[in-house]
Length: 483
Ligand code: 5AD
Ligand code: SF4
Image (cartoon, rainbow, N blue to C red):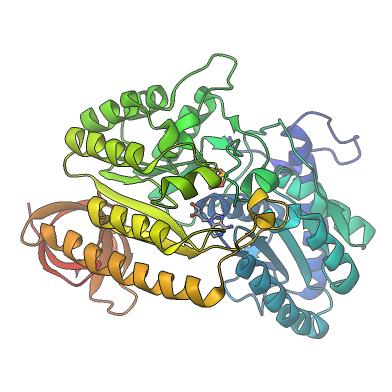
């Protein structure tokens, strides 16, 4: 984002109609309110953004934080102490919703002691009408509610709340709009998520995402490239390209472009060292993409390829549009072009109608592919999705038993798979000082495995060579090689 001088914006003018200028106006306006309130309070006002769910939400939270900082709030890590707390919610599984209600109850007790505190809610859960009804009825202390499509309007919504003093609710059903050039406050100085597309058109029958994130929209490649160039100029060496289904990037652009073509363009950006992306849908993963991954210097040796189930019968009921055989062929093709690739996946157990035989098919895929790691989920019924009204919902005790067996299998395989790099030398991007031992730093290999080794804070953001001494399950202990 170019630097904007918000104090030069004339607030006696009408707000502009065009974006992002309109939001710059409201940032300037909210800044005035926040400045007055901070003066009265005798200290700067603070904010805390709490993120639930996926990397998309994490990136959205950076945008919320960026806007709040421009408005004049300072970041506060403890939500019990902040003047503005916002929950960026997830609704992919029911337990995510329960966690939000639980924490909101606690936050209400904090607000009773600090009546000037503001509470905001946004993200996927807010796109569900029943949720908003419940909040309106039983959670009147919430100040601001908005959804996934109008995050860019955050400054305007804050200004409206500060002006009116009333609960502000603004939820859109869908949008075809993508607003560029808004502020974002990165969590890490050296790596960043970059949205390349929003929404999903796949309608897997268990999944609520297409209903809460809307239809697929790709960002213009020039905007993506410009954003990455600016990030690189600001010290970023690794980007994670984000979309629900990155393999269908560009299909709906005025000038269509494939994801593989976009990757080729991003590869050319000087100073950028690593490219990651997520999530890939097996049905759209093209030969062109496999080729680009095989020849690229910068694309990381990691592919997250959700299988969801190993049973072709269940995959059909899930509306995934591939079979077990198709998936296994794809894995073989990828491994023959990119032999050192690390494969990870998502698996759901207990989808309606799943039998022991279906589950055995899933175990079979896990044993054949030998994933580096797998996220395993218990099927969660999401109201409004086709699977929610399917017959033969699997009893909880059966699902739990399958889940435990799956987890055991996944963990024992990934322990074996991960240890193959022992005694090799690998490039590691250093991310943090180790949480448990300040004499160590923690970084990631290209294949996403974590490595801990002796080193100091000055290494953060640098790619260094590390000899991997010992594998401890899912991570390595190593030693840096001095060049
Ligand atoms: N129940 C359980 N897991 C789900 N996922 C999506 N919807 C559901 C659901 N209703 C999982 C899928 C997806 C991951 C992000 O979440 O495995 O890949
Ligand atoms: Fe949900 Fe399927 Fe879209 Fe992924 S591809 S977000 S699982 S509908």
